[in-house]
Image (cartoon, rainbow, N blue to C red; front, side, top):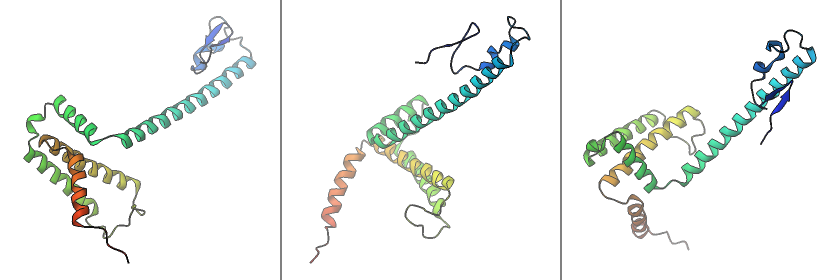
Length: 180
């Protein structure tokens, strides 16, 4: 932990806004502060600003890492619980019938379709897309996924289990081609 800096009897936190500690504004020192102390304070303020920027950048990087880890580790069950809690808090459960959720999901699929509607064929990875377009696509894909998870939950279907079983059925129905 960083300790306080003692300057002319003031205990100054290392990341404090040093202007408020300036001897030029102090009743004790009046207007007789030396240029040396004023320069020292200006340098401290500059270092303080650099420290604030550095800490803010580190904090943002950590938040990004946590968000990325969280998004990679989240399960369908976690999302289902979050969606259930979200609906409960807003008293929306009465509207979350299978029919209503399906229609809402179809509406979101329509919004997702609009993104691709006039683009023609699109290359894998969307190399020619703007970041804002990719972000919008992610939002619409998420809307479809969230409605699908909520619909499965309301219908009493374990979506992860159902998907795993479907993959097994698909592998039987469409076996690997035999290579000679």
